[in-house]
Image (cartoon, helix red, strand yellow):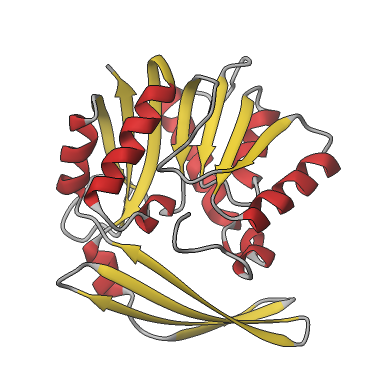
Length: 244
């Protein structure tokens, strides 16, 4: 399993990531011209509580979500039942996907892939995704960069209607490891959780993804640049790749 179980963060995940779901859907629409699935198969890796995937299912995709966190998957199944949608969710490590189906599109959103700390494991992820895609299938994922690691390294607090969060980040510029110590306050209690990620250069990921057989179609800055151009100050980049 990956290092982060999201045991407590899962309880407030939908609030924290609400806007990013819409950003990803817009970017997909920008590239494909539509997010209509017409019953094509979508695999969402690191699917969290399923918000993004369920929106895609509403747009006609046949959805499968995997996440290493049992709690995330539990919440995703509850949400699916409440919305009366059909969607499959499995507890899986992205390094060992272990699914029988083949997919037309695979996604991995919100820097979930940065939880992969070793290059050799990143290669496993890319190889596994490649193997599960149909011919000409697409793989779309985002990463956070070393610049992001350095830029956002100050402790901060945030309060929402039902909870509060304190995040204490630290970044090692040599190893590119970002550690986030979280304290979540909700339901009258404080919960501690530590998240460990690695920041990757765009060029490094580009090399690994191409070695796995993918063609990189686009790499975009997904934060606030109108031209989407990646540069030295890009904090989050999205890769749009296609199976050769």
